[in-house]
Length: 139
Image (cartoon, rainbow, N blue to C red; front, side):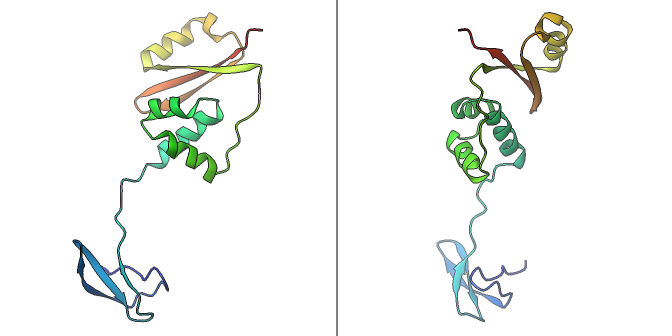
């Protein structure tokens, strides 16, 4: 396996320099910097980041996104901040959503009454589909 580049000077002139707390330690021969390789962690797939941001833009709350996608609401808030996502301001409509399998989605669309109203969007959600519908607020 190839040694990592130095995180300080990006040099490839790096050698192994012992083990600390079960992690390989390296030393840069150019700048004499000692370092260990960061753990990989459990990164979240870009698919879930995109879905979370789509749901946020559609008006779904952070906690609801957490329940739907299984990712922390704090992560969603951090992505919104990182990508500077602004939620559209529209006070006349509010989103409602349903999680449907393929057959239920086809049945939903077969009933023309379901298609009347403000508007809707369907997005893939793993092996199911999420239908988001905007309904006019009752005054």
